[in-house]
Length: 293
Image (cartoon, rainbow, N blue to C red; front, side, top):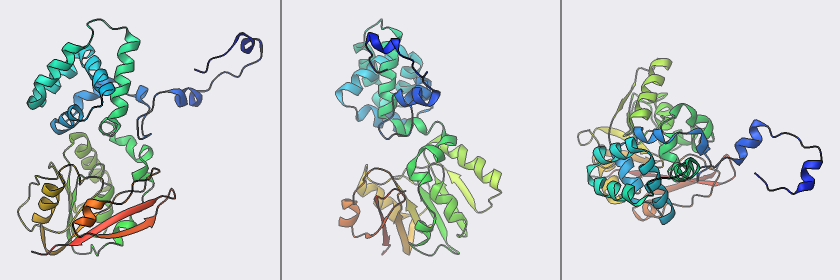
């Protein structure tokens, strides 16, 4: 709350509304969530790869907060240790570093720091709100995909499908769409949407970008958005492996409020850039590459 002096209380004040209070709550780094809306128990839904990425990518302040949060949430610490055994020693070390006794407000401050820093993973636990909270979903138009290559009669793979932004758009034109997604909550969300909409040419499966559960040359079009980059060479090689000769690799990010910049890795790898001014006035950079084998 804003600090006030004595005279402030002598004047008539308007009581804060729910919206006013929401604005004062801690936000995630991308502005998608208010961390007070989430319990730290959402960490119990994390996948192995998410746990590893979080524990490997913490600045000192976030690491201190993670230590405190894990000490105060032994169920989360247990899950991290057992679901991601390669990080078990780090989890134990972190929990041991934190004070044994912390005030509830100290614990919640630490939890909010962790939730905000890993906002993308947190919001994946509530996929039903992503379409209204995530700018790259609600600001995007499916025509931006259709402009990149013909999908009619094609077999398409969407890698890191999320809530199915690209996959559902492709299913309107393609013969068949496979949506590969490593987060269970997102897979189940897509399956529910497929059933609700009566879609018959789309299936959902597990799979990481660098380890896809398909034979060589399975798809005419392999696409993704906001996925490739953590292990660039291995990921692009895997996308290429499952794509037929003459097929297309597509990188189709959604429109965002923040400036994202060009993807120099894809450009250096020979991908064609197709940019446009997005919904929020920022440049959105799409890429495509025809597969030659």
